[in-house]
Image (tube, rainbow, N blue to C red):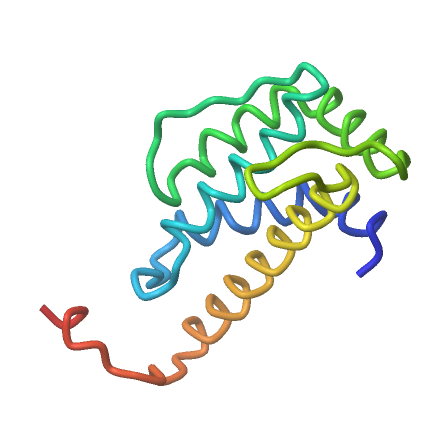
Length: 142
């Protein structure tokens, strides 16, 4: 998907993820307790370069609730920063593994939110249709 489309659907993707995690959807077998906080921290690193500071002590996938609340309070500023980063083809940032273009870093974060929202949406539809589980995890039956 093109960067502009990811940018315009960010708020919707964020809302989809939050609503899925608030639902009765079974996500204990998914890696979201690890991946969501990591991706939010990486997104925060990009925003911090431009003076927007998001911090949260919440652990696991629940950090996305704090992030959504912060995003809604700072939506205009965050969108301005994301737009500026996507337009700048030369700005870079230092990471633990080297140097990367800010645009590429943001694009990867936006893709993560899109893919996570899509996956959770599909899982909710399957659950609502009463689809059988693909694998029976013994620890879920306890």
